[in-house]
Length: 246
Image (cartoon, rainbow, N blue to C red; front, side):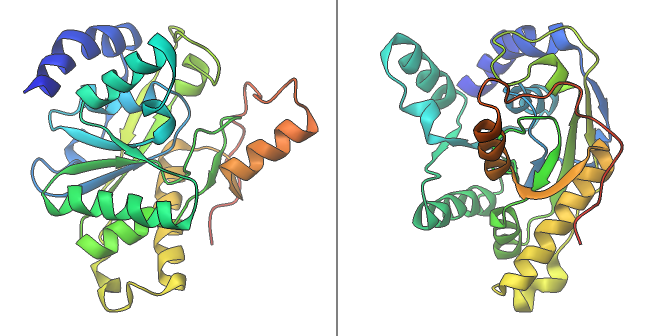
């Protein structure tokens, strides 16, 4: 009950009305039943645009740091994410990754709508990076369809480090649900998990028209920071679409 009150009283005026996103393909999001919304991740505001756009409640797996901050700001941030039903996830290792997958599976088996960013973190330069296989594991374990989602313009609206978004055109584009039931008998094979993940990333790339980089986002950001610590964000990085996952 609090989720919807907070959504309509606070989130919509704060996020949707100022940005006024254009929404395409909303018919592809199932009205009932388990489903995964898998999207690119360009901005802090991405996680709020999807919930304020969809009538259904969306549960995101959020990084643990949002719940463990210190001081008044940290407590306020933690209270905010808890109030809208988001789930903290430890990203520190393989055991933590398995626990995150189990948490996502529980949401889906209860018939929920799960939001996830397969890249694992925000893009530092506006390009689309290699997806992690957790999204595939959740889809294959539960049989839930995966709805690809592309955010377009949110990087320019609020790149990393910017507190308030700019008034720029923003588009949210949902694609047709992806069904991976054909892999049910071999769902635990690493090659299958990689193939499913790459198919999801290909669908996101087709919607977003981003340049694709076959490297994990965290690794690419670390390399960029090491090469040029003073400049880790490269504005205007939406060049012609690059190679897609094979």
